[in-house]
Length: 271
Figure 1 (cartoon, helix red, strand yellow):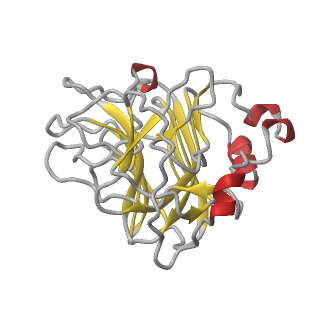
Figure 2 (cartoon, rainbow, N blue to C red):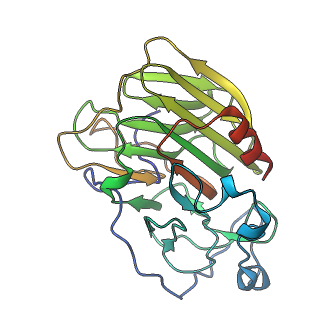
């Protein structure tokens, strides 16, 4: 399965989203069989347990951290990036904040798997060298896109992190590695690490489930047309076939401009 960018993109290859205004209106729609966030849960809006309770390496100022979206605002159409880069993500399609977050308290957007996603339009996120992604996801469907870098340029692939019935995939350019499928209807930690010409690694639940050291691309391909990163991208990365949208939620999304260690990923999975 191919076809979405980092968060979820629908425009013809953008750079990473234009910052959307934080809105106060809430969608009253509720999830079907997945846990629902109550009014009390939304009002609490507690960020993890506060940076003071976290190891410094996992804070908003962690080394090599380009973007950190907790995705637990509880209302509005923006994921706030807590780093000093302020790469806020614009939520499109109007999904409701009705999914209970991974800690059982913080609310999460409930994506419908059809026409909603979040987009980033910042050149600062279009790295060509080493990068790492760490996120938590709640899946209610058999396939969908978690994050990626896309363009509608024909036969072009930047990078992609997705799941499908057969397994979970991490792709950089023409090279793909695959691990087991994700558990459904529960929060799962997923991470991917790319080191140019050296290695590609995929992690689920803090454990490495796929790795490749031969034939690894020397850099992330760049599109000749405007490109973007997104959560749950929508246009096909090859300019034709769209990827499936995510049905479920995302939280605590981190994007690093470096290849982080297996030890760091294991710790993030226990956070």
